[in-house]
Length: 190
Ligand SMILES: *Cc1c(COP(=O)(O)O)cnc(C)c1O
Figure 1 (cartoon, protein in one colour):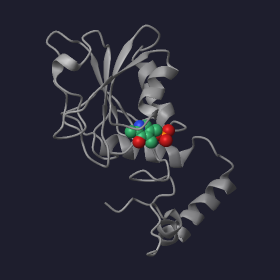
Figure 2 (cartoon, rainbow, N blue to C red; figure 1 turned 30 degrees about the vertical axis):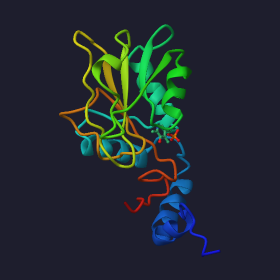
Figure 3 (spheres, rainbow, N blue to C red; figure 1 turned 90 degrees about the vertical axis):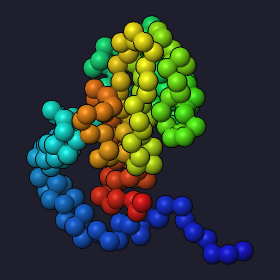
């Protein structure tokens, strides 16, 4: 058997930034402000300007951010939300958490990202969650004529990609350790 190659070696990645991360964590613990505070405000404003958005709000997880996004748009029980077939389970989970119904639509064969042709997107859907995977921006879907469905971005795996001039009204990001930019501060090599 050949050598074992770990799928994601978080410890090796952390080693490269260890001193910087540990100093920041020590400073945070000493301040006693574990929730909110200046470091989060700084991150929120940097993320907002990096993505050309009016503002950014910290949440507990990418799933929580998706849920807030749906709630902020008034999506709830009785609503249908289009979710692409190729994504992580949390995309549909957030839709279920607000009491809405995920409508799973197959993706275009060329990009593997954007939900298929307009007709396949449920005409009754009030929103489409466009999922950007592997650090790639999914092209905007063609919505059925007359559809006023909201376009929202699940950018949990694509920080820095959901810029203005395309895609949705609001986007959710994730800092889960194995994402493109994990919470420990080390970007995945890609
Ligand atoms: C990881 C992921 C989420 C959820 O993010 P968490 O921070 O793990 O809750 C949502 N959507 C996609 C596409 C993801 O990859």
